Image: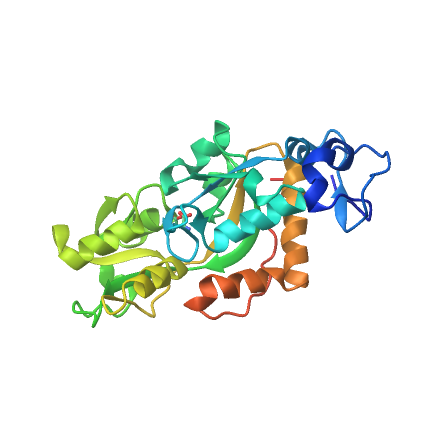
Length: 295
Ligand code: GLU
């Protein structure tokens, strides 16, 4: 179901007082000046969120550039800003967003059991996950890469060189699965997070000589530990990052895809990238082909 764009609206300041009139698809005239917002069909998923004025979003809390809990106590990064963009288009203000830490292995469960309403957490879209949850996006595409100690003491030149080495990754990630399936001679060590893997590699724990996950995540870890690590030029997969949704919300999935497309078109997404990941990785974004909501 496509949402209708209308000029009728509520200003952010009065939104909480007027949600029923503005967000619930009620066609009665809004008592406030107009600016560009959407009017949602009354029985849509979007209208439910807009009426509630709040939403629960799963994201990482330990990943530099994407979702990292800073001194403010709130997560910060690209995924967090994308979540705010989506929530904002529902008319939900920042204090209406509850960020809930979602690690790689609990993302599908969190969507299925209602712990979160949607997830933005370096979440690769793939067919296996799609049997349990749905995906809007992709928002951006990363690729699995390799982090080693500065100076590359093991002389790892290509991904195949991981065979015979101890490689650290995170449980429940595509990264861990790919290591097992693509480099069967590698010893896989699973830890709670990629930054933890990097710390273990620095300390020489359990013979870990490489950390493998998405290149953009590794770039953030390297930047946060200047002089300790380097990301090799050896990316070996494509990881299209989606926005995870519970199954059966096709209208919301279409809505999120529309938000992404608009943000590509008006430069908002590039701005978010530049202001978060862009501090470490410069990239001119091109919108990836949408995965599709009717799967
Ligand atoms: N993008 C990969 C995944 O969704 C690896 C990063 C992560 O664990 O979040 O599994």
